[in-house]
Image (cartoon, rainbow, N blue to C red; front, side, top):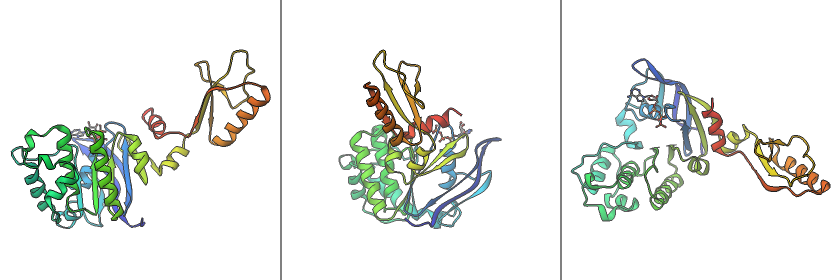
Length: 294
Ligand SMILES: Nc1ncnc2c1ncn2[C@@H]1O[C@H](COP(=O)(O)OP(=O)(O)OP(=O)(O)O)[C@@H](O)[C@H]1O
């Protein structure tokens, strides 16, 4: 991965009749990385993406894509594939016609039936868009975005409504694009997708970026947890363990191996056997919950 920025967002504001949905958002996406823009409902992710995609003008601030303004369509469009949350396909066109049309408008070159096949819609190639199921429409959305293997692929909640096998197909295609050097921007509410795949994550809340970093960096911002129970009449465990209010004990720690080791040593010396012992690093869900609780 290089340090060259494919997307540069600088102090972006997006306003709807005076309401600032995006407030001073700044971040960069580097060439070849998968950047996940996550956030609470209404955080402003889609509004920011709409500016990046060239569909909306900012109230203030700047966005550069490959060093160009997003509205410089002639320069930017052939290099960027976009999967929106809601597509606006013509209902009377077939799947294959849609891929051919949107594909040719993108300015990239590909083979329509190959793209239709990659997203598992070959049997529906001749079906009108109006007759597709929700998940099939999402597959078609992805097909038109991935057409011609764009250098930059923007995926706005791409797997919502997709079944497991369609999700697998989508990620397989994304992985292949990444191997070829494509840059991916992803928004999703499935945190495990971001946790598994993102090189870096930007956590948005109320219009701006609250945290940014690798999954490991975000996890380090919150303590890991050790939870356990003790048999009745056991001695009280030493600090930093404390009662969790549900009959068990909790240790919050930034040094999981040391504190876990100390607990087990204490238990051995005291002759007690901890039950229901659970220990693990902070999950992205926890980081997210701490943010949503602001
Ligand atoms: N066209 C619009 N007119 C007025 N307000 C809008 C409009 N579009 C979005 N908003 C408001 O802007 C805020 C940000 O919305 P946006 O869709 O960007 O959030 P999001 O992070 O994508 O949310 P979600 O995760 O729920 O999809 C919300 O409070 C929303 O109600």
